[in-house]
Image 1 (cartoon, rainbow, N blue to C red):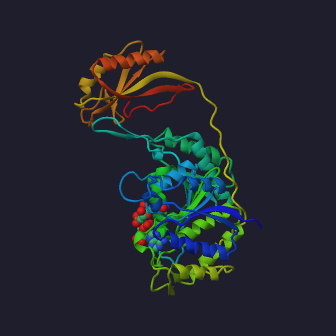
Image 2 (image 1 turned 135 degrees about the vertical axis):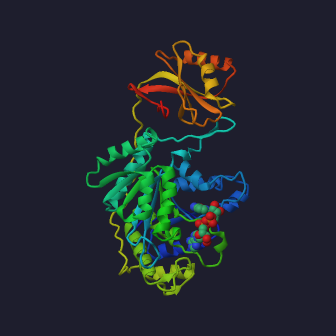
Length: 476
Ligand code: NAD
């Protein structure tokens, strides 16, 4: 059968050893791969390329569209960009998938029955990295959530569940507070879920959901969530399953995909034949399913389970009472390769029948008409006293636009604020009125400026289909 071209990077630290081990096992299982090797990471960074990846390597990635990547070391000090973030964003890898499974009793865990998959949104949320300084005392980070972003990731979670015969998809958000951003994620989840009647769906507020996951992970199956919650909770899930050292992950895009271990380059363990290659190997299993070789994925995964069950363990999971043989990276790989074709007896064998469906593109929503109804003007006011600022800013009223509220970090402080509310030096002044137009707003800004007030930024207030496209202040 035809081999599938993939791009491989051996990485830094323990990277070359665990990649060598992984490729040895893939070869023994008959993986049909045409490997192109690229150099990324420390050497490239220190050679003067601040992105850690050369232009010619991008060519390989864009040609093969499949990337098996060992961990890299990001040099200390400023100026070096995270290669992981660059790769995910540049290649549009919107879904980060992390199976977190307990291998009780062979790998120590507090949750013997745990078998969950975290599907983390990878492109949006607070990770857009858009930040501003609003005043001497206040910083801002924008949380961006899009309809196509929510649809792609929630649909991916349901498609994943269907392909892997999973029964339930749970969504975690904080939409009781962030009604517009997390609210959109939750609403889209519900809409997409309706197309998958064969799969159970539920939603948890992320705080209590996270507590439940850390306490009783057995009640979850697939969990889908926005970027920040997913970043934090996928590490928690991998750790409580047994070890972050044995989890692999997939980063899936509409065109390209990247597969890796979730741990780093562990420089202190490098070059000693100590590292556990399991995380990268299980990442490679996800890759084999993705490229249409589920038969090989099954052979590799079951051989690995049998090795773990036979007590052949690297130092990080070795325990006197349960392990039989302490081995190095190379010997572990040889033990797995020797078990290709075998299935575990106590651990549940895996069965991969079908190749992953390519992810589906989603369209932007058709443009909805909107109506301008006012503007939020952010100002810096050093005294932090709303009682002097309010009447002063109100002098800028005119053309039907009136100051109807001021807030400080989201809490209404004028009019009728509470003296107990702590105020910083950054205030939001909300002007609203019928027949708002751009020229009227520009004239308003000029009047605010003319009052000697420092305008820092503005946000236009719009209604969409008669519904406000902005939130009310707390207490408004
Ligand atoms: P790390 O994951 O490399 O190591 C954390 C601990 O886990 C160490 O004690 C290490 O010895 C152990 N460990 C990790 N993987 C192991 C394995 N396969 N077998 C046995 N033990 C293992 O995290 P760190 O020390 O915070 O980071 C080291 C470097 O890795 C940094 O330069 C960091 O930027 C980089 N990093 C890279 C990636 C990536 O490329 N995907 C991810 C995380 C960190």
